[in-house]
Image 1 (spheres, rainbow, N blue to C red):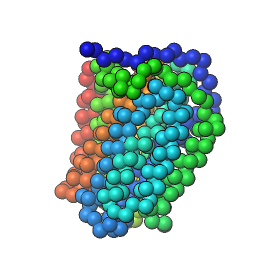
Image 2: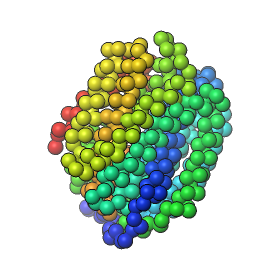
Image 3: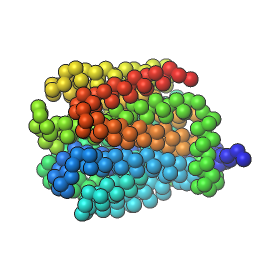
Length: 395
């Protein structure tokens, strides 16, 4: 029998997007997703705490990102079925409990297991993007979504800066307590200022999940967007999950604070996200996607050829993060324009693919680092960038 797609509800007169709401959506997206990445710059401190080897400690970021991908697949689609404000508040409460469990983790296995739950519920960050698409007018949707995506990407990158500084100064457990505080501040702001938004579809959870397959089959542009972004996201996973380990060894011998500070370099690229959203509004998204893939390829190539140079590493970080972000904003614009009644599900499919790509990249990066060192990481980045560029030209 064919899959039944939940019945759409027309987009009634939604409250308009105003500057304060856009800021809140961007902040919520960033604070929500940041929980996936806080621990990465302090991984060598986690390794020392539990006396684990590099392969074992690598499971913490990998499983957290797997949990995030599962959260995108299983929880983010609920935004089409229920009031998104209530969904965000419920997930925020559960996520706060998972973060507290992580702060109190007695073993590495417990921390990795808690990381799955943290990742699952950190899909809350993605719940803000369909709200932006729903509230924005058609002619400004790319720019508004781009601004909220800037918040999301800044959260991914600056979380590493904050995580590194806190881990170095207060220990790796302290960042989880800070994350709880930030999350509760956002939850109060959402409760106070975000409007209630009606569900976009009618039906039940089972039908909602089954409709994902129908959407996947129906939209070729969705399939291409998911696979291309997954390849590019793998470069993020490979680089950021091993950066702290690489900087801690020769020739750099640098601590968690410096590793986290590299998030500032990546965040510099995030500031360009609204520009790419504006470009997508005017000329279409494919040019920015292909430029992004080229930047990833060239950045990792440069960091391989000139390895050992800290300025080259910083410049490469800015450029390859910019490339991934340019593609992500453009893919967000594509999928949010396919079906207004299914924006949460379409965004969920896109980001599920991206997060599985990032998790696969984290695993590949840990393996490449353990066996081939920095050249292995750069080879992974060049390979996925090449694959993404080729995929962007396919039908």
